Amino acid sequence: MAITHESSAGIRVRGLTKTFGTKTAVNSIDFVVEPGRVTGFLGPNGAGKSTTMRMILGLDAPTAGDVTVNGHRYASSPAPLREVGALLEAHAVHPGRSARDHLRWLAASNGIPTTRVGEILELVGLDSVAGQRAGRFSLGMGQRLGIAAALIGDPPVVMLDEPVNGLDPEGVRWVRSLARQLADDGKTVFVSSHLMSEMSLMADHLIVIGRGSILADSPIQVFMAEHASAYVRVKAPRSTDVEALLVGRGLDVNRADDELRVQGLDAPAIGELIGSSGLLLHELTLVRSSLEDAFMELTADSVEYHARTEVAA
Amino acid sequence: MSTLTVPRTGGSLGRTVKAEWIKLASIRSTWWTALAMVVMGAGFTTIISGVYAGDLADGTSGDSPAEYITQGLIFSQISAVVIGALVVTSEYGTGMIRATLAATPVRARVLAAKTIVVCGFLFVVGTATAFLGYFGGNAFFRNEGVGISLGDEHILRSMFGAGLYMAGLGVLAAAIGLLVRHTAAAISIVLALVFIIGQVVQLIPGTFGEWVMKLMPGNAGPGIVVPVSFGDNMLSPWTGFAVFVGEVAVLVLAGWFVLRRRDA
Image 1 (cartoon, chains in turn purple, orange):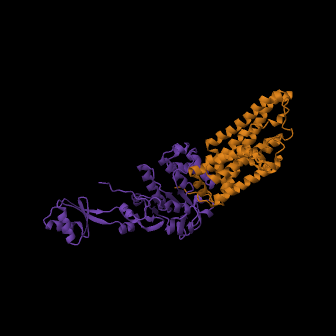
Image 2: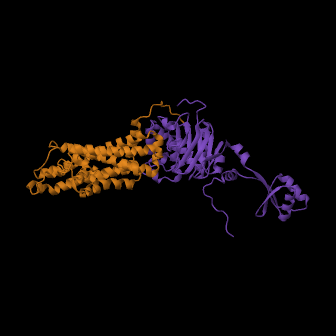
């Protein structure tokens, strides 16, 4: 294994920019992906996640800026699969080639012993279908093969682009525990997703990207504390009176259907206030907005395509 | 998780060639296409020889048997083009090219390895096809008492020349594949160049037209495949092949230029 200095381990991105014609896909971003933890790379579709990952692997040339992996450029590595393993897309496999042959050529290209092919097939659970043509694989099996390809060189840096796409619940759990295990082994694990809920279960650290810019870069707890908000849900039969009362006390009240969302006071205090005014209460609940909501809020301005959710009356 | 203890060594062309060979050999269509090359090439040579053996023997045709002994290879050209194109375009069609370039970031090495593998494979299959056709066709000629021998003038050159020409044609298709990145487009372009455009340019009048025709890859290249030249209006075998190799080299350079600069 290569000897790497603590300071250069992981992935370092500096001023990275990519433009396609007049469109800026990635706009001068800087971040560091540290070893020993799972770093989530979160953003809506089209935010620049895959482009960034392709630039890390030297597949796309940056318009400006640079990337180092373990202290040097990816392309300068004599056996890059032993340094960085990447799952870029599930079907980067010839449909007529068997899983075993796909891993065999990858191993041969980087001087990795052929015995590793059998080991890795077993690790991802494809050993029983190793001789089957990859074109017959389900999306989930294709993902497993892609992950096998990423791990073939036992690299210290593992990059997975949307690894849980198309996986069944068992497969999703497997990817989560695999990412955790790799990080616990001291590897650098960089996982992209457009699903906040997935990231909240997998990542220790979160880098959020939207429209090619970094919107947040922080440990997941810090991200939650900063971005997730809470309110008290109040349901009452005479809700207009309750609303008037609460607004009169200077509280922030939003009406949503038949409920009131109250901020500025905790639930017991709100309950006492309403009760002491002789009004009836049907429900009083503290609601913490999920990380998903925090993510939606953060990226609301950076989503490429909005769906209209209002239904015409 | 196990740890790999193999020492770090420099990347090498040998590894990339091995990887490219595994890729080519692990696809069933490679073998079907190679089989088609052999069956069509050797088969048609044998059939054509069988049909004309009688005429050659009684002197009615005025041709020599050697003119027929590599005729079927005209059809083998199609297989060479298909194999050469697929080595490149199947990777663009499936997204595999990203895996290839991530495994071997030195793109010139990827191109060199693909060229070596295509050349080696098509040289072997092309030469084998020529020999099989020779033995099949010559059996009819012998029957009629007009058999030829491998020691006859230009026969051995034609056998190995067939391998060389098929190799060159495969590389030409691979280079076009790099430029257009699409299987059907690459195959159509090369087949049109060899079978149609090479003939159509005869319509260009004057010496200029003659030269354009002579220099077309599908006309210049196969001179080394035929023991007896197609006609007076052709370059000599090795001169023609040198021109052909030059043309292939220019296209490979163009392919390398785009491969080097293009995002994968």
